Length: 86
Length: 256
Image (cartoon, rainbow over the protein chains, first blue to last red):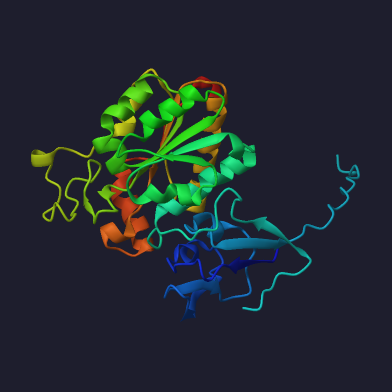
């Protein structure tokens, strides 16, 4: 599975939890500490982020930057050998 | 967790450069932030930030000019489309958009809205509809649903007394000046992607001077509706969408 990660701007996040609901991997949760505004902020709670960007798309405060592992060079197309089957 | 960014990783999503670093004043979970970001993403991707003029409204999004790093002009309450008309006529090679809420566009600015679209001004009108006056404390708006409890309709909106929720988007779609009319939302990732496509199509149409593009975004108001952001999105799907169904309302043949 492709691995990714996110960086949440914890001082911008208002803890609305929309990203948590939109994450297909349930990777996100709220922090136990609070930021300067007094909100608990979103953070990764599991290591299974795939970098799908769903959380960043619904974030009203644009607090999430998404990273994903680079795609390796495309595999050489596999040769299809004409089968003997009729 | 200990998932850290390393050299093998690349940025796949970041905040658009045209959106400033100013923290937004919106309540947690408000749809305005997403609409701002999607609009700025499109402007970034098209590379038109230097040639775009936005018109900010009165309402929750009154400080839109703090967040959008393009030329902005504040308009009097409800008059954003009239101001945008002036900007576009004086500077016909600029991309012009107006950004309004439901109390602004559908109540005090109904006249300006209808006549701007009837003249077919080459602007994009963004209409964020959350069915309530959010900034002033959750009063009933023209788009509040029947039976909806607000601070000025504590027993629910009574259609016999104050009329039905105004479907202004369907109304203006009848006008010949309207080129592209659509209704979207921003509550799910797929809805956000669709909205982005609609904004892009609208700016493309503006380039060709086709007429007014009008995009309604059905949004939530967690504070005004007195719910958590996730509850408000669920409520929106359940109650707002039957009356304000998302989808294209008027699409020119060239866009289909």
